[in-house]
Image (cartoon, rainbow, N blue to C red):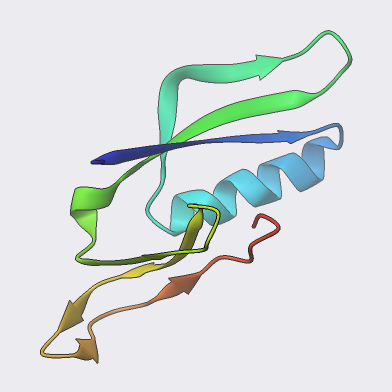
Length: 88
């Protein structure tokens, strides 16, 4: 798999913006047509992660990302990002 798709949703605009920006700072990109406000007032944004940006990716047992980053000679090169299994 070369790309991972994730949808962020929240009814609170500030919390939604904060979470989307965190993911963007970790290397995720906005999907071109992925932003919407759903009928029930839920803000929704589809994000895309190109796995080719990273040479080190670990997954939780359920298949979601646990850790992403870059390694060289067994050492961390840059930042490693850890994701909680409950999302975020």
